[in-house]
Length: 439
Image 1 (cartoon, rainbow, N blue to C red):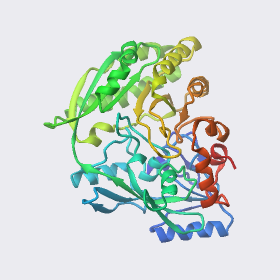
Image 2 (cartoon, rainbow, N blue to C red):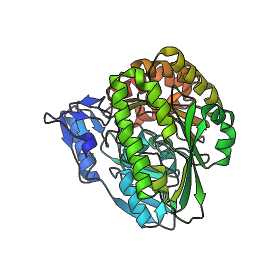
Image 3 (cartoon, rainbow, N blue to C red):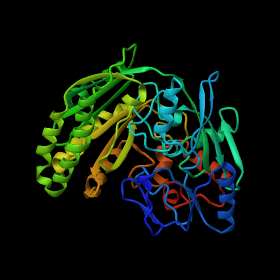
């Protein structure tokens, strides 16, 4: 698990390289019973407990100086229920392993994000999502959960069993207990046709409602310092399969998206003045293409260029205004932004602290190459997002606190009351949770 490689001195670092921690001890339980015992022992020793996945969060949500639980032995599919069309997996299973195993069984999740390195529990606990008109985040596809709570007992929840825990724990931020297994709704595997094409930003924003309504999954990338975007529409298809050819795939996904892109980031970091010119070239380098494949091969792509990211969910109706303000800000600021801005959508869901809880949402993500100073850009972007009552992704950089979340999440108090009940002693507390949930 290179993304969570620990230093010789027991230091844990996240994937983006912007968070590190030195836990008192690290435990890799091989069973739910072992995990429960580790939780009880930590409580006896007066140590806090945190579970960590692959470290793909840019916040310190998994950092602890107490006991760090690593999930690599809690992996694999527990059971597939074809009558109910569900699959139950151990919490440490990486999404890429789940996707490949489901495909072999002729099954698939309905929707997913664009990275599949994360563990299922890390991805769902932070609200990881893709883009979709009707289908929402990975957590919204959960039908049941099993978690070890602060007293070391194992709690299961679903819409019928402990429904108040189920409402919150699907995106639980690691605050309610340690997730040990997740049951997802699945469906027979299907084909998606992806259509990628460049489009002027003005046109995308003017026609956004129509592009959203006409496609099951619509997203686009805007290249700052330009008026250009690359759009992507994914829709179900009767086939036949027409995967991206190996050479074309290597050129677009490895050479342009990872190789040349990485060099461009290095040049931009060394000589910021070159960034607008690089952006103009990059935004024109990608040509239109169409391909048809099974879902995870269309939804996900490798991300080998390390970056730091901030992402906010704003009401979908506020997207055009939010992006317009972001564009003016970049133009006025003298900032040099070499990474495209990613825009996706999600329908309203019923998960207490989901970024799409109770409202149709658009996601705007800003990125900076790892090692580039990002504070000025992110601070200015965050000012725009919060003016639209934006909700930050729990696993991405933001500066919001409990007082802010009380305003933008109508059910915030419901979550904190449940936490008081399940973890009164704050065994699962860390600095991040103290800030975002209050003490």
